[in-house]
Image 1: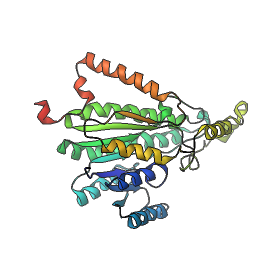
Image 2: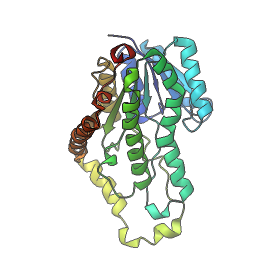
Image 3: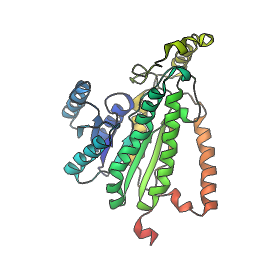
Image 4: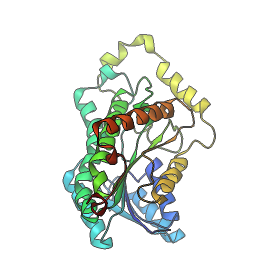
Length: 300
């Protein structure tokens, strides 16, 4: 196995935390990033350091706020100063919004889009010059089946994930001739083992939310039903293990999309059909080579 240097965002809890552990246990050097590592996330940061000490794996905590270009630049510089190379970035940091669309203010929706969609873009701007120069690397995005199959009461989150998904796929074509892989690992609903729902943003306009009295109880019904439909093994570690599997594949052989969907909500079928049509379009445009990473030597 090739030992890689990996940077994971949103590593404090849930999928990000379990991804750090899965990658570290596979033998990689993993930089677990999160905001405010000496403040509100100090305990989470210390838990990962203790885990590394106890198990003997190589996990290092690094400060990174995906809402700041300066923070993204600094985090990447920190990794490169210690490792000389950065092989993989896992775009996991995300924030959930739960409630009636109309009741969210524009500021709230903009904040969710900033974290979930623009955050990965900031980190790409920090790391892609390095990856392009080396003509290798992997940008791995943690997507969501709700990019394809939507649920009520998660509008801002679903919109942000769909936008991130589109940017990820476009980036795939634009970096392919520089030997860089792009992959999207798409989890379905996971209601346990994560702070995603408990820390989600609620709509600020309670007056508007109250006006939707005909939907009273529906949000809780959906959450209860999701919990009922989820099997016992529906937890963030399954996603972390899938990310570790994709990372371990040889460059150029990593699939664009894989799905970890315990509910089988149909997103995988939609993705498969869309991928076939996209490939046909790229062929008609005469740029089918962008569907797979190559390098400068191959292009000459």
